[in-house]
Length: 422
Image (cartoon, rainbow, N blue to C red):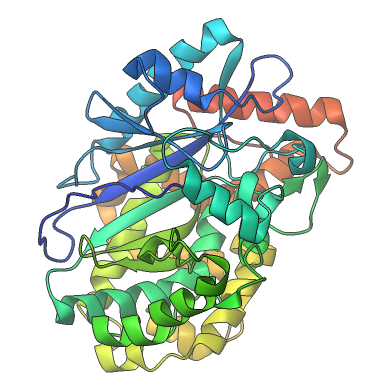
């Protein structure tokens, strides 16, 4: 995690007028693919100092909690998602060029497949380091749930209290099936975990010492800033206070739910999307997510009141199934499927629901647009976790795992999708 975030200087934009996007990547050895804790060297090479944020060609490069992760994010809120993939791909190329003489490269996906966080974790020691030290003191960051996870953050603005309510209601409804689309973390410490989205499994328990920090990941059904402050933020601040006497963590970014309100800049930040194999995949995925959110805000399939009525528990059940099974998760809640436009009675898989949503929201030639092409791979061949497991085969040894993740590094460097034979 990092305290700053994309679009921090955003103005009072209305729904879907601007977008803040953040992509996180691992720094790994060019040959062995072991993690390399050198993000400060990369940022120093550009800025001439150990700055936490450096603006480069329309993007901001930023540090993260640990030294083997770097974040690329929009330097200012973008008016469109279209075209951003090219900007991020250029950023990837520039970072890789700086890493090459250091014998390193960028690796995509949401978790390093064989990192040992107990021995390989190195925290960022420069600007903002007191924040990371406070998290480490409270939660011990030498674990996968802190030091081995990379994701995409999508920041969406709201113009007033009413827009906040509508956006928060829509986001809560779509959060449970995001892992089915975006899961990319099936391997931990050299072994398949049996989960499509292991990142979210370790993430949801990383603050168990103070449960209010994460809640159930799915945010509570609150739809005004006042309710949010009273029911979510104040309990977090109250529970942190005895362990944080200097108030280092008494900020809204300490909230670790799957989507968090950032009232300081009038945005909601979605955090449950695993990093994909290349920016083209990340941005295509985000376009589909935004299209679904637009439709929900417009009450295309269900009313705002119906969206607000969803409690945490049924949404969490869908979410947990998607964490485990990804696109093959069976949604055993016809009311939920109907709220997202599924036209049939009974159960459906999360993959079927996403394919239906794509067909509805991007019909005909619009769905064939080049910047949406990565969705064909995701929707037809499965989430990245499924494709990784397929490529690894039934008995994935170290050599095969190394080859698959080397190919993922190549996909990131060249801006191409990762495919695996059926």
